[in-house]
Image (cartoon, rainbow, N blue to C red; front, side, top):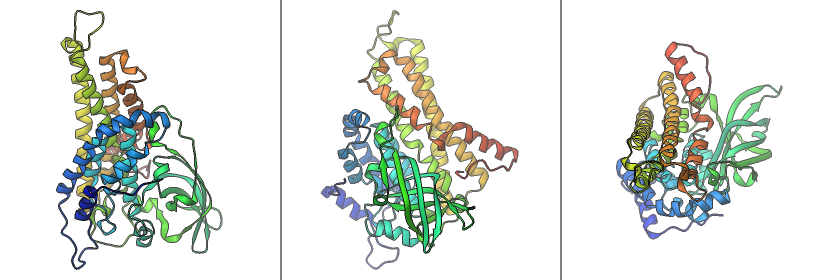
Length: 421
């Protein structure tokens, strides 16, 4: 379903950034992450007109249009966190977040699909080296999606595991070549020996069309179904071990893949929400300059103290979300130099959920200021509202869980609520 053709421009940029294993004779020099980030974010921002043009169609069809997916690929979005040795950019969480935010200003669903594939490609590189070769060695353009919830079961067989399960919601399923899905691994006596993520070729799974939601409709987060799928031992990642920073990959000079498991996966979800919040703010501010405030003396909403106050409150909520998110993102990126302790990870989890909630509240206030026309079927604001309210309720962003985790940490209560910390 993919067209791997790229423009000459994209090819030249990829060639500039892609290098072989560290130390290989003749390898190209690698630009700084800051240089790569500036270029990648600019390319993401340049896609916004296309994303806006196609967003309503993706929403109606419940699938991001193929031309948008192709454009994301050409812009390098899916390779943001893929190792340079496989032709990726090997950047960092800040780059992913800034790119996702830029895309989210154009279309939340497109931003979400780009983010999910990029961060799951990162996740794949925590697996043993042979698994990485299976995925990216054979296809540098591989796209991995995933569902971490352990809704599958693995039974031990010679050489690996036989896995059966159903996994929802798998955002970007139509565009994936591989999937990382959660499973409980059972010992011979039937007891659960481990919770794991297992890598499965998309061709071994069936996609059931189950994604019928109010928001983020274009993400096509359908259900993956697998029946007795063989998974070799090297395509298994223990989630409890990964949660503590124990990854079965080789010790290479690739700092990105030492990032903290839970914080990396959860914070990546915030970027598209920040973009949606900025799009709502810009739309309402622009309209306020000419839109009358009905049943008042104000010919423009911008002249109303009430509207001024609401927009200021919304802007500060969005700014609070962004400050909290990027503060936490930078902590994760710095953490590649050494493991983050549990208290820091708990604080990051709480900030991720709190930031998402602030964006949702900001958007709600903006729609209050704009008025009932915000909910017109053909309007942008109603789709932003639906998308943000759906995305912010991802299990990894539920504020109550993050606050409980952080509160327990502050109080010295050692009950473990979630592995995703």
